[in-house]
Length: 345
Ligand SMILES: [Zn+2]
Ligand SMILES: [Zn+2]
Ligand SMILES: [Zn+2]
Image (cartoon, rainbow, N blue to C red; front, side, top):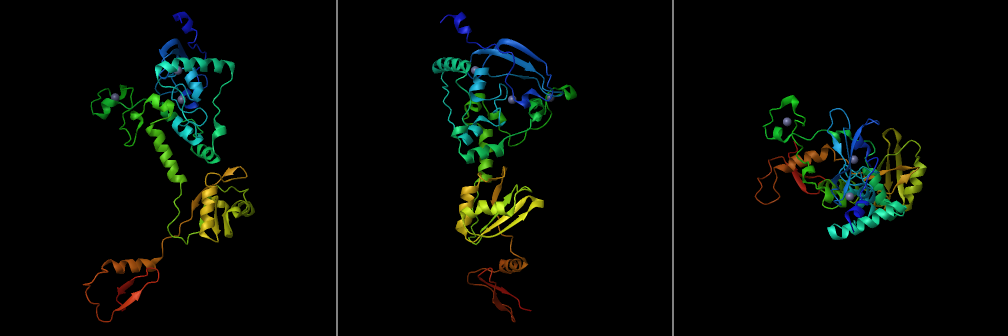
């Protein structure tokens, strides 16, 4: 293929594909446009680079990926976050159960990209993977999605000189004079990994947090058979909850507290409560409202057990204890089960 011919496949676009955050709050933002200004950081083909300032006090932004690459993954050309959910590709694709099939090696990529360009033009391809997602996956996405723009992300980067205590530009310095957050993994991110949705430390952190919240460890105390529901809107009645939760087992009682947007479901058996958590977690949508489910753990035991704890502190269950003072007797606290000695006077 001649150079002129292959250039036909280069992109020359009128508008960038951007998320709301990268665009900034001003709808009339002015941009500069440079045709074939840089190589796309994913496919290495030259593309049209846009530059703009997303707001007062923010850093200039520019597009980093070509439009074909952005469209294949439905991501912003600048921040590489998913356009619909505002999430890293890895988070979205994990939730939707999608695997990355874009080749990473140069040889295959050229061919692959050209085919995709043709398909995009013909309108026979789009990023619609939702069909594959489980209801739980979709619910997870809904819970994690960022719905409002997050303009803080457009702030200038942190001044590396300041961090080392060496910046002498003071107020003139265009970078942020702040210390980075201890758990910031952003510097360890790489645009290829983020795009392909692999090895992205930020995505991993989001997913880990989500699984902690979503994967509910049943309390060890097997007498616990109650669940706490949150997000119980006014139009959800006790009857609605009963209709939904009865499917998992016999219910002892339901208490709805609309002021707090919550409800308690008490099951007759532990097995029923476990089934309810298993089946309903991430799936429970009543009258269009997703409900969050949690075990309702028992309150800490009352002061009586505190006394017992205090009393047992000094006592070793082994031999060689000092003899009980005169007038003492052994008392057994039912809640504790083991013998505890305290003075009876
Ligand atoms: Zn590209
Ligand atoms: Zn963006
Ligand atoms: Zn500085």
